[in-house]
Image 1 (cartoon, helix red, strand yellow):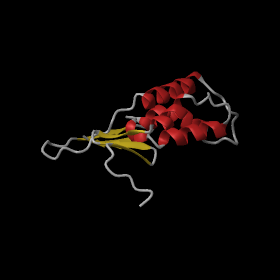
Image 2 (cartoon, one colour):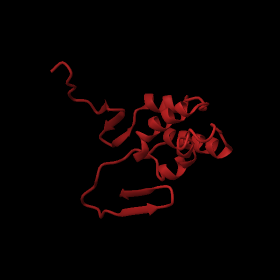
Image 3 (cartoon, rainbow, N blue to C red):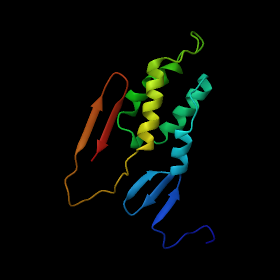
Image 4 (cartoon, one colour):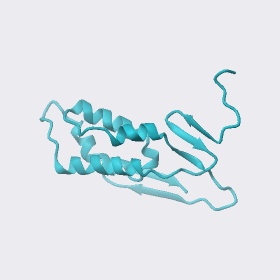
Length: 129
C-alpha cells in the first residue's frame, strides 16, 4: 500500500500524465526531447527515434515525418552518416510537435466515432476520433 496514491487528480504513469481531462506526455520526457542535441551518429539518431516513437500516438503522421531520420538508420554499412537539411527539418518538426502535443481525451460514448485512415509510401496510420 506504500506505493498507492489515493485522491489524486493527476498521476504520472509510464511516461504519461493521466488526469480527468485525458492523457498527455510527461513534461519531464518532453523536456528531454526539447533539449536533445542534434544527432552526430547513427546511435544518436536511433536514441532520438526511440524517445519520440514512444509518444508517436500524440504525433499525427509520425512515420512520414520521421522518414528522413529512419532512412539514416538503414543500410548503415553501405553508406556514411550524412545529416541533410531534410533530416534537420524532420528532427526540428518532431521536437516541435511533441512539445505541443495534444491531450488525448477519453471516449465520449454518447457521440459518434470517426475512423480516420491514412497510408503513404512511408507509413500507415489510423485514428479513432
